Amino acid sequence: MSEGSFQSNHKRLNTPSTGTIARHWEDHLNELGISPSDFETPNCFACGKSSYSKKSWSNCRMQRCHIIPRALGGSSSAGNFLLLCNSCHEAAPDINDRELVLRWVRERKIHIFYELRAIDDAFEQFGYPDWQNHEGVREIINSKFPDLLSTDPTKEKQWSTHGSEVSHSTWVALVVQEFEIASLRGH
Image (cartoon, rainbow, N blue to C red):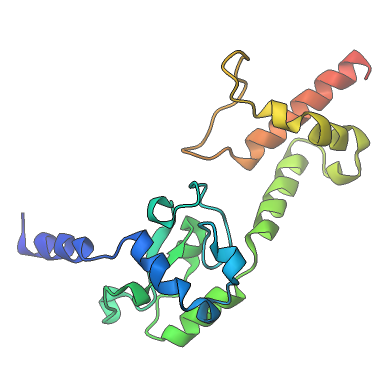
């Protein structure tokens, strides 16, 4: 192992855990623009995307993101890290200005807008650009959607995941498939 590789790995070993970072920010939520109720479950500090971990910041799937990057002299203290989803981590500014980075976090668009845009895009790609106004599609979503994503071992599974998450296009495809099958049956 080269000296540079050892130093790089050594620095990573000093990175605080997600639980330690979350505990630090619990007392500084106003700096992030996060309300205490939004902090009860693990979410991206910037966009609010859920980490899908059972209410444990220690086991959350958020990425540890430096506020001030190491390359610009940033420390490995918990206060120099944010917990961000992959998209926000990639989009986060890499600058030597803590307040500007925190402003970026506070002003980042709420995750639900990204989710809805992705859902709209998927419906449009499947030929249903006006899905929200389509009574049959809305009926499938309202009445059968929980069953479409069932993990009941007695039912044949019709879908899979990308890593640990069901993609937008997967669940939209399930809705479209169910709607089109029901339409063929004359329902």
